[in-house]
Length: 171
Image (spheres, rainbow, N blue to C red):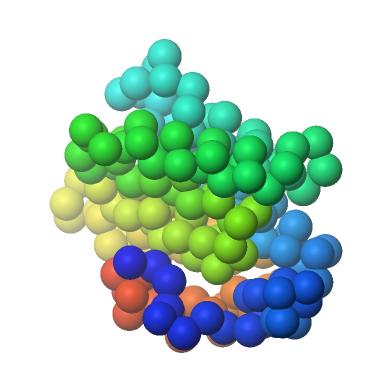
């Protein structure tokens, strides 16, 4: 569970009654795609022939460029999450990160899902003694990638949803 029961209006587009601009929604989608792509190899080493997570990331970026509709990006995200179902550990989390990135086009708040699952993937890939440090390093890398226009929004959202995102944003 990565979504709050009450939606934050800052993560709802203006046309749906929130305050999120299209430009900021796009920035969140690109950041989520970067987070997911950063750990994609953890999936691809397990399933090199399964392109669903890579396609979800590509669809997120294509949606930002106006090349695919929201429904197509959302569907690609769902397919990536389907690729995770029979896996465990880092590969599973990496596929979920890609899936979450794909569905940001539909619900902007999934951006934290992509980031949280990417951190979980890195933690799972690291030796147990290094897991926490690896997760903190990934969290910091993600924060370094945040576009300035949405930086404070994401950091505040991480604070607010950290508990339901497995406390991965304690970095």
